[in-house]
Length: 243
Ligand code: ADP
Image (cartoon, rainbow, N blue to C red; front, top):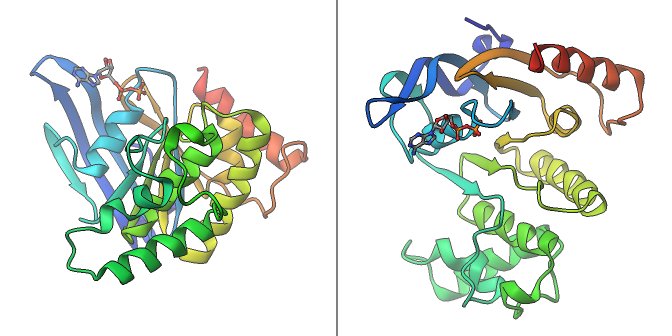
């Protein structure tokens, strides 16, 4: 069982010997154990079909484990790869969407939505429809919407994989700024080892339906991809990834 130092700290998510089989036959995860401390930026990486999304779905409560114990907070929100915005709502209305039905006044809903809209640098785009936004802007709206409901954990499912490198780089900087400002715990699925090392405080390698290894990433920020310690970390993870 892979161990990580998170087990000694205040833990917000833990998997204990967790397995998941769909329809009694399709294995997705076997005996997964790990812990995520409060305030961590955990990146889940691994080859396609290895079980990463299953880990995220178990944390989100979208699916239940077949065996083992998952400890997680009730209040999580998810950002999907393609933003998953309501196409008929304006950008600001999309951010406000999750706030309706919580007994808040309209003024409070609007001011909260505006706060997160601004935090994501979206000012001026309030009335635009999703189809009138760029891919990066749509992802920003998706992140603002997820944060607006004040979740304990923010789940990101390959949020930057469809974006160009410059937009990705800008969003990386902003997500780190927001993570620091809000103190939220983040769990992000990524297919990029470099992205995981650039952002994460820990990297969870999920492969062949199992948690193979947990890496604590202790590099100073801002992180530079061409710095030696960064490359060393990437190399170490690659060795396990391709093993
Ligand atoms: P990843 O996110 O790493 O690509 P997944 O967690 O999506 O991996 O999938 C792990 C395995 O579980 C795959 O073999 C996949 O086909 C299977 N799987 C995932 N979701 C379902 C489902 N709803 N029904 C049946 N099998 C599934």
